[in-house]
Amino acid sequence: MAVILSRRVDYPMIDSANIAYYPRIYDLAHRFFEECWQEICTISYPELINVRKIGFPIVSAKTEFIAPLRYGDTVKAKIWISRVGEKSCTWQYRFSNQSDELLWSSEQITVCVDMDSLQSILIPDDLRKGLEMCDE
Amino acid sequence: MAVILSRRVDYPMIDSANIAYYPRIYDLAHRFFEECWQEICTISYPELINVRKIGFPIVSAKTEFIAPLRYGDTVKAKIWISRVGEKSCTWQYRFSNQSDELLWSSEQITVCVDMDSLQSILIPDDLRKGLEMCDE
Amino acid sequence: MAVILSRRVDYPMIDSANIAYYPRIYDLAHRFFEECWQEICTISYPELINVRKIGFPIVSAKTEFIAPLRYGDTVKAKIWISRVGEKSCTWQYRFSNQSDELLWSSEQITVCVDMDSLQSILIPDDLRKGLEMCDE
Amino acid sequence: MAVILSRRVDYPMIDSANIAYYPRIYDLAHRFFEECWQEICTISYPELINVRKIGFPIVSAKTEFIAPLRYGDTVKAKIWISRVGEKSCTWQYRFSNQSDELLWSSEQITVCVDMDSLQSILIPDDLRKGLEMCDE
Image (cartoon, one colour):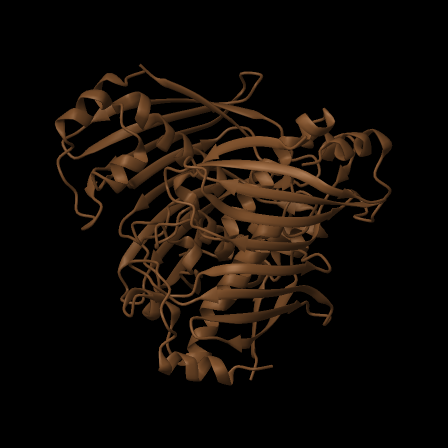
């Protein structure tokens, strides 16, 4: 089942056009990504990174910037995993605002890596189970 | 003709895995994007934004993260415009490091807008001329 | 009365030494600063900025970095206002972690300005009332 | 002798008030800090961090925000070291713009640490020599 999370658009996201500077929308997506591990795999991303030394860096992304994120908006993120491979998985992000207007859509492939070597590894079974259940 | 620019990977780009945090690669791309207006259209992006009130926000992006950017690397960016439409244009970015290893590739569509209304407008002729000449 | 807020230390705050990169601690402080207006003056900072066109930019800061912020920490911020002048006020920040260890302490003077001209103005009475009540 | 460096104010530094968001001025200071090691101690900061595993994290800062940094400005930084102790040293930053207007002044104490343990260590002699010669 998809994860739903929300965060406010803070002042530092905004540029001189009064909308979110686009690299910071990816940054927001990463903050949601971190946060959803607890719900998807019952492990925090800090524990995954620091204790199990496993990470999921991005290798490709396709993104549509549909409407601007504005200061004072609350972004609601719907996040799910559309494909789980042996070593990689595909994340879907849909951001909308407090008026349910769709703002941002992104498909991102991440690879499971050993954080010390940054070499790809098989997704461990306990994580795979959670990831596979996180469908739309 | 493509624009070639280079910048060092500064410490703030790097994460705890000792590689560039991916949203900051988009941020680096934007810094190159700003810088290349002078060469492509003989106008600085600050002047375009502040004086002519014209901007080119992103509407879609397809990106491959091929190899990590590391602290101390110098990123060489090759930037060109693969398509100029009536109101939008498509930018190509290829980042490599000091060993000519390809690190990052991105195709980004930007739309010409009036910065006050954020509504799309026709690309002005003087800018179009420069953009069209910036092919690979 | 001081405001107490808390936020997790997200991955983008962390540097290659596995601790928060120091400018991002100021960024975190600003996110708390924005958030506390609702409690102090019953107005959101987005409304203050966007509708009333009033802001409180920083003019000076004295800061002690006492212990590192680490990934996975939850930062508890205690924020109060130690002085309210005619046009400026002095904010106190104390950050501690989930073990009540003091991490960061900062005293920051901000000036009330008209956001269009960036010229200083007298702090409006309704805001002054809230600010004066936010003592330690 | 003081080090003089300059960088342009890039778009990502700017906020909705059309001036640099203040935590990003510290970020700019850090980028200058990194860059000046080559001139002061004839070693790059990446080499200091990655190879010698020595860093100089900040422990305290006193800062005056004198005038705004604006988009399109070129910031000229004058950097020197006003005191070298056994384990710490005090950096002075003065930022001015292309019109020689003073914008930002900061005094920052950094401590020499072993990057693996983050414990303070004596400043190595070869570095001390360079740091001591970098007076105003």
